[in-house]
Image 1 (cartoon, rainbow over the protein chains, first blue to last red):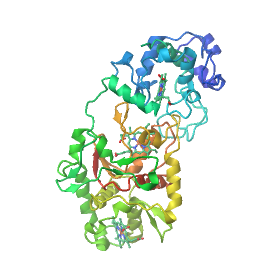
Image 2 (spheres, protein in one colour):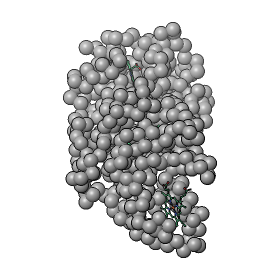
Image 3 (cartoon, rainbow over the protein chains, first blue to last red):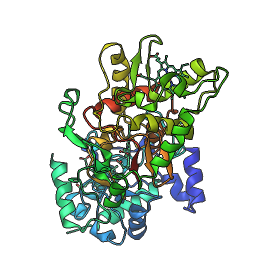
Image 4 (tube, rainbow over the protein chains, first blue to last red):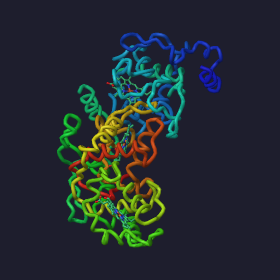
Length: 157
Length: 282
């Protein structure tokens, strides 16, 4: 939690928004894995979400997914389904749940859980190969997830 | 099933980056004479996991594939030549070289194909690297080499070349079985913050692109491999370490009991493929 607030301040988010942020351990998933409540209360920025999805150093979702909306991003992977039309197939709450912790929606999914901080086997310190200690910083912060969700809902066929 | 079908459709709809894609149907013949089995039926213990096994060579680009087809083009052979000189060089307190006991390196024919292997006297599963260091320490009175260092990978490559084209055939029963089971369990463990197992990438998704990488089955019949990326020979343990690190996990060390177990298990998944080392990868 401490680290969380620190991250929000560093990234320039208003301190007030940080106070409303739902911590990874406090996210409520329904039986199908959806998350109704916004993680920050601040509407997502779809353009920024698109950038995170395509960025190797951020979401890197294109490592596994292809999507026409980001056709300028080279080397899109083939592990997961195409994301085109994801906004037709899933509601905002469902998409939030999939990005925060896909395993609540797809049991045993290969897709990483982006808003989870503990319960790992041999957790590492980033990509150093050295041990990390839980709780780890989540792969994406709450506002990044809201931004991605805002982008995904725009993906209509 | 549903998801495999979806990705197949996805691949058709988008002009996926086909640049430098491998010809998965090509056949590997080295120096115009050594016919390599790079695709064959999976061994019985992989029943239900994989229908057939394939060498990593099949998944590389045409250019990379070609580099391995002739020893003059294969940069890994430079290290093999260096190790040949070391084979004949005396070292250590006993004043012996490998050749003092093993004669010509041709005497090592067939050895690579059956390692890692149970050593009765030592009561342990030994990798080739462990055996080489045991000879250095107990037979030669020489310092052991760094487990995955350049001297070691070069010597492993030299010894492997003597078995090129022979089928990998490591034993998984008898006293080695519990170590094999340990390796198997590791193979299916979802390590790290990305919670990915070897099987997630190399069993469920071989043939698929993960970002710019064309996923292979993660076989080790070609090890040590020369990588164009770091221009040296790489041990299987170094590769395991890199793959686990990339799951944002705390990795294991080359030469650790865990990686010895994993090597035995992964080697056994390739039973039937040809010994290829030194193979060439990107």
